[in-house]
Image (cartoon, rainbow, N blue to C red; front, top):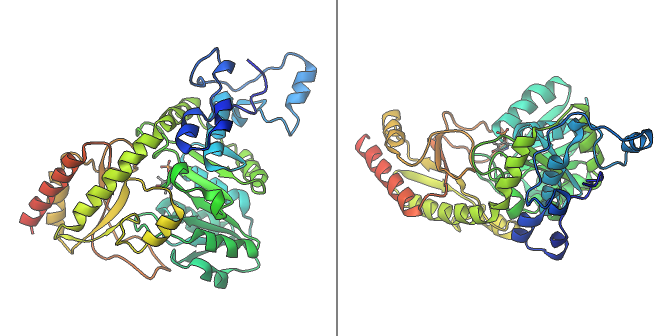
Length: 404
Ligand SMILES: *Cc1c(COP(=O)(O)O)cnc(C)c1O
């Protein structure tokens, strides 16, 4: 095995441009691991050198390989390289969860006195982090309407350091005009950080749309099997040193078994996502016809307000969307959830199994034109047969109707 693992990548990767092919080959180099198809799970803290010269060489800042387990192992680099290839960034870093990828990416860029603009439809715990931790550290946080587009120019200040976007938004699925926002952010000297979890590295190419750092809860579709927590952030060239330094300063790392599961999950992500996408559209269209459904928030439906931007900027849709019910009472809601057979009630999403999650109170919004007062249910469409999923939802709605 070569001691330089900087470029764990397959020759096939260079020859291919299709994402499906990249998914299969990126980050793999069997010849370096006794021919093993998969990069093995490397466990380790200490990495010993043969002689003083090698040791000193390993400590050079431009050494792409670590000289200590916290900075990465061949397993780590394999995953980071694969994500870099898929997203088209400069380099990537793993984090122990999606949330830690969001919070530490933010922390890498900001200092006391800075101003951060954050989408009002951001993932709840990222919002909480901004409200609690960033504010406590003397950073001004301002939420903006996810539909603001180029008008974000009016919010930019000399000390605006980061514009944090997420598209489509958590729970409410507004699609943001990322290129327009990025253009204004860059004019003002700010960095654009994107939570790209919904679209995955397959369906939104962040760096083609002006994003500086793209963040994923790999926990979701990348792992894909609800059996690990992991985050990853990839950066363009100018942001990479800042992201990397920040993560290293905080001692960020992730366990090799979870990274291995992410690599394994990723290999089949293209076929899984096509099914999540197709079944998601079918179920969403079906739910639109339900009398107790007020609206379906799914940007890949032609009737959705986000459809125009989604079809302009995205290459596909995943299986997560929200339904807004008519104002039904709690008894009817209980009946609905208790009647579901195939949909689990649970947090997270992106696994092979279907989920339905009630939102217990209206999502926190301080800057959005649209707010929701009716019950919201977030649906993750899994890989079950779509006819079974539709009939399960159908019978649950029927029971809910009887309980009104
Ligand atoms: C789940 C999620 C996260 C956090 O991921 P964890 O791995 O659960 O920490 C971040 N952003 C979005 C959009 C998510 O859905």
